[in-house]
Amino acid sequence: MSLLIFYVLAIVFIATLVRSTFGFGESLVAVPLLVLLIPIEIAVPLSVLISILIAAFVVVQDRKQIHFNSAKWLVIFAALGIPFGLLLLIYGNENLTKLALGILIILYSIYSLLYKSNFRLETDHKYWLFLCGFFSGVFGGAYGLNGPPLVIYGNMRNWTAKHFRATLQAYFLPASTLAMFGYWYQGLWISTVTYYFLISIPAIIPAILLGRYFNHQLKDGAFLKYVYLGLIGVGIVLLGQSFF
Image (tube, rainbow, N blue to C red; front, side, top):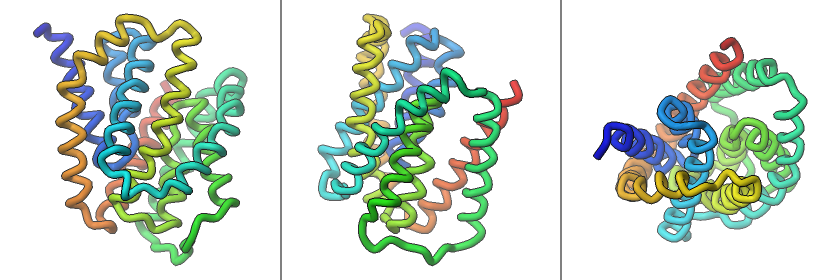
């Protein structure tokens, strides 16, 4: 095994472990590290292919934990937001947008860690589904940041760690499949992407299983604490990217 392949497999394993444990976030780990080793036009489609495999695996494995109605409407409303995200990517000021997103994510996460909100949704609410789904599409279409709005909705619905992880995969499976179709249409899904994906499977599967174990060991309060700490990390990365 070459040193490059070893590094790629190590990065994929860690990124998959993060995704399988918390339900999101693997692209924020995988893409920045992979682009240090391979071209970005290979790293990004590879990350999306990995996302599809993780989501499909979890959906089959933990389908009883999925809130399918929530996932359905989040996907539908996210599809409405993706075109606006693409416009933001093309015409917006990237550094300014990342700066604003980073600040908002950090402030919301700190607030959620320090103050426990009593606002809860007993059932799905179309208004909040629209807001969270739409902005997940906007942020995802622009910068691949689908996760934060989904975290907000899952928190309001008071999902357990198991439901949170499983339901997000039911969202990411169709969303990532559509994204991969777009890469194929644009000629970005090439044989090199498939090669790296196939050799990564032996690292992906055990990471999914280990992440499921970690997810099931986390108590719901501790789970959300780690999720918000992770979001603070995302915000810090965005702030760093806005200045460099």
